[in-house]
Amino acid sequence: MTVNINDIKKMNISSDALRWAAETSLMKLPYTYNGFVSRSKNEIIDNLFRGDLAKSAVIEYLASIGKNISDEYDSVRNDNFRFPMSDIGRRHHFMMDNYKVELNSSKLPPQISYINDNRLLEKDIKITHNNNDQIEPIFLGYDIVMQLYYDLGNQNYVFNLTSTDISFVENPDNNINLRVNRLLNSISIDPLDLYFFAFVTEQQLRELPYFGNLWGFAKAKRQFYSCKIKDCSPCSML
Image (cartoon, rainbow, N blue to C red):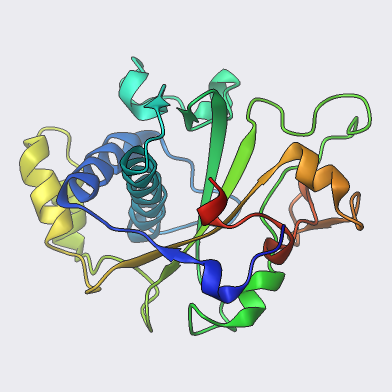
């Protein structure tokens, strides 16, 4: 399959998806690691929210086209949001019919300003490299990887949070509905646009002519398979 820029699909973002993403991101906040580079609370909240919102929007879309959605991690977990999936050896975010789905969402790269920029098709879907890729399955714990991008315009973050806002929303003693309202009222982007670019299966990855090529981030040990969006499958093929 191939993906071109006309294949990308804008996701509807419902009020239910917004509220659920806000609630889950706030519940995860106390247990979220800063990462390799120290991040502000605003950055951490923003990152958590974008990931959870993309997942919720995609789930609503898939359900609308007749897919059976189950086993969504944040809905079935019983750990009070303490442990990320990786800590318990889980990789899939939810089930679509009989397929385990991992979902990636990103902001536009710094050098790209528009969602219809063809250079996005040259970007890779992030698939972690395993040393025993010729013996073990590459997709350990999932069957399909989906890639979405946010268009935040000229903004770096979804939220414009003051220090007072952050103190309020991160305080577990405050009512969760009030915390969610405060967070959503701090959204600085209207409209908040999210686009489904492509998905890929392990078989598709293995059939790529450049299968085995790797890439990674500076100062990070983990590497990823080269898997260009243009060489994957469009949303319409789901």
